Image 1: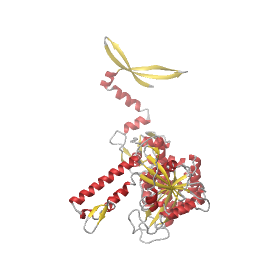
Image 2 (image 1 turned 30 degrees about the horizontal axis):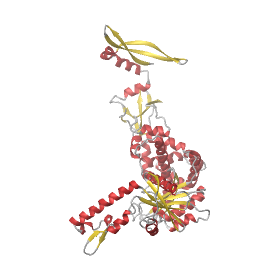
Image 3 (image 1 turned 90 degrees about the vertical axis):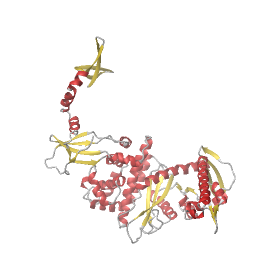
Image 4 (image 1 turned 120 degrees about the vertical axis):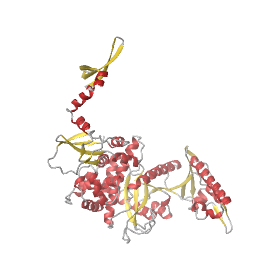
Length: 549
């Protein structure tokens, strides 16, 4: 049934009447029956009779009655808990099959608590409010999710130890489920590294001092190597001692891809930080069968690239408006020189602006104004008595405008190699933006075993983040991750008591939260849900002032 306006003309004047109409279907036809005519709309509004009728009808529906009651300033709520992230990521958690894997691995361990719920809490904390296990045990008290209210600090510690013990089984099982879920073969993989430091003075077999990306060389760290496939999906990870070089991490990771995940035919794509003679030898001369690779080259530091490859003449093949390629071979080594004409113009303009700035500084402020600025050094010639612009260096830099160089042992056409690397570069950029989820720095556990468990939870959180982002991309929903998490976090569950019954209220969906629910395949809960009679002894927290809707 619904209310509609019916217009009527009398004596040249037009009036509107309100009618209650019932709609019904008879076969393929829809028929409408007027149940009652309430009267002229203008008179009903002026007299306030419509408001009285609505209040009277609201007594017969719990939802409208509760919504009306929330407008009272005296109404109080028992608790207001964050609900949105747990609903969205909880559905993705189930779709990835993680609960079944954890239940299977923990069935013989006689845990007196729900280890699957504790693992999900640790992963969700990483996405919503990263911090220590102590902070996590306090954070779950403010989240509406099944099983969270029973979790305590000791459960977080025991779960971290459990995850460290079964991390290989979790990773292997997930990799096989991913192949079935997404029907993907592991043909192309991007490998990248990051570091994680810990607040401590002493080193051990895992936490050692090394090259610090966080500019904290005084703190021990571990090196984290992560493998991502061409779709941006996290496949595997490994932790190495903090003094492990990127090349050595690549070597160990490649070997473990074969043994742990039974991966054979792989094209390894890595950026310039991974390339060296040793890494190329590792990939091309592997005893179990060589890996194919596409590696980015250091154009300035590699003499062969800077001296021979970039100086070779030859026509570029146009692949797209922003990509041209040509192939160069030096003995048995294959290089692909790629050029972006649009980026080349930007590089030229930036360099010309920088050189002009240097000339102005030298003319007006003198050489001392340039001392200590490393960004200017490559374009300057510094003598004992003077500083001048190095024209030779400027010309050498111009040769690199808009270019990047790849080396590969594949037999794919040059344009396919370039497009493969560019697609993985976009994956890398996305990964670097999302890698903050995996960068669990700093780690508060002093025991390496517990630290590994903490990273396992962060890896599961990264899978949830990538999963949701992929689904949003498929729906062409463009929203930054911080904005999305802020919007989801504003969806709360509020518990109130009214007339002897307990109700759960959902706060309004704001921003991009509704798109996130849709992407994850979650139907937003009803605005008002009857939970049952008010318990005689309420174990909830003290009432708080209600503010919602």
